[in-house]
Length: 467
Ligand code: SAH
Ligand code: SF4
Ligand code: F3S
Image (cartoon, rainbow, N blue to C red; front, side, top):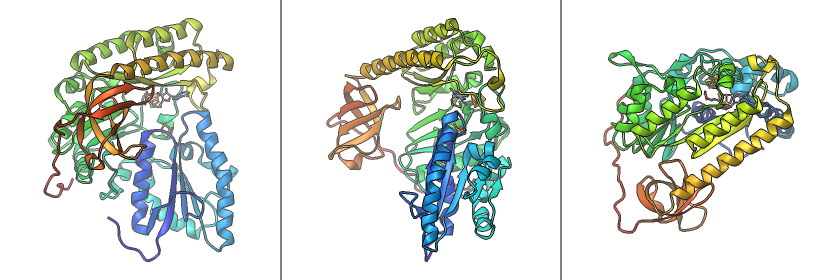
C-alpha cells in the first residue's frame, strides 16, 4: 500500500549477508513506505540510511565499521544544510554487538536486531526526539511477522519468502543461533497468503527462506504442524506459480516427505543447496553437525533417485580447529565423489562467543589459505564442467528481465544458472525453451527455440484470500 505523502523522504538500505537479510531489507522498506520513505540510489543526501549487517565472518563486521566511517561525513554534510540523516544499523552485527557499535560510532541513531523490524516507525520517531542511540535487540520473533505489513512492494518475477527463522543447532563455529535466536516457523496460512500475494504481484518463482528452512514445522489449519514437504505441495497448487525453491537446508532435516516432494513436484526445481561443511567425520563431530559423511552421501543418493536431474550446491569450511591434512583430503574426496554444480567455501573465522573460537589446535592462516585455494580450484572445475554439460540441451528458462546487451533477455535455468539469449522483453515472466549454445564458467548462453510454445501462467483473477 503506497499512500501519497506531501514530502517524500529518501531511504537508502545497504544489505550484506544471506538472502534472509535481503528479504528483511525489503520488509524494512515496506514498513517505512507509509511514513513517506521512498528508495534512494545512494546514501549521500538520504534522509535515512539503514545498514543491514552480517556477522557470519570477521570481514563481514569490519565492512560495517568502514562504511560507518564514510557515512559520518555524509551525515555531517546533510547537517550543514540544516537537515537530518537518521542512521540505523540492523541485522546480525546489531544483534551481537549493539553496545560496541554505539561506543565505536556514536553518530549511529538506531541499532535494531533482526526480530524488531516491525517497530522501526516507532524507533524512527524516538530517534528524532532522543539525543542518544535507540537500541532494540529483543527476540519477539512471532511479533515481527504478525506486524509487518501485508501489502509488500512487488519483488518481481523471482521472489523470496521467509518461512522459518533462527537455529537451535549450535554448530561449533556459527553465530546464527546467537544473532537470530531460537528456531521459529511461520504458520502455514500466513505463508500461503504471502505466496499468493507475491504471485498476484508478478512472482513466477518463489524461494522459501530460512536459516534451517527444512526444519520448518508451521502451525497448520487442520491441527498438526506441517513439514516443508507438505508446505511445498500446497504451494505447488497456487495457479501462476511456476517454480519453487528453498534454502538453506541442513542434512539432518532432510526427511522422507521432503525427498519425495522432489520426485512428485515438477515445479520444485532440481537444484538444492545442502551445506556439508567437511568431508571428515572427525571434523563433522567437532563441528557438532550431528551427521556423518555416510549420512550425507545417503541423502544425496536418495535425492538423486527421487529427481535424477538434481544438481547440488554446498558450503565448505576449511581450517576448522583440529582439521588435519588428512581431514582436508577427506573433504576433497567427498567433493570428487558427489560433484557439485556450485558451492561456497570459506576459511574458518573464529567468532567471539562460539565454542570453536576458544578451541585448541587452531589451524595456521597460511595453511587455511592453501587448503582454500585447492578446494576452490576443484569446485571451480566442477562448476565449469556442470555448466559446460548443459551445452546442446534445450532447457526451460524463466525470463527475468533485460540482458546486458540491447535485444537480449536474461533468465534463470532450473539449476539457478544465469542465462542470456536474444529475445523480446515481453517474454519477462514466462518460462520458455532455450537451446544452450555454450556453458561459460558462471552463466549459460542460449537461443530461444523458434516457434516453441512458452509456458504461460495466468494470474489468479480474484483477490488473494486473507490469511
Ligand atoms: N544454516 C546454514 C548455514 C548458515 S551460515 C547451515 O546450517 O549450513 C552460511 C555458511 O557460512 C555456513 O554454511 C558456513 O559454511 C559458513 N560459516 C558460518 N560460520 C563460519 C565461520 N565462523 N567461519 C567460516 N565460515 C563460516
Ligand atoms: Fe549455523 Fe549450524 Fe545453525 Fe547452520 S545449522 S545456522 S551453520 S548453527
Ligand atoms: Fe549473516 Fe546473519 Fe545471515 S550472520 S549470514 S546475515 S543470518
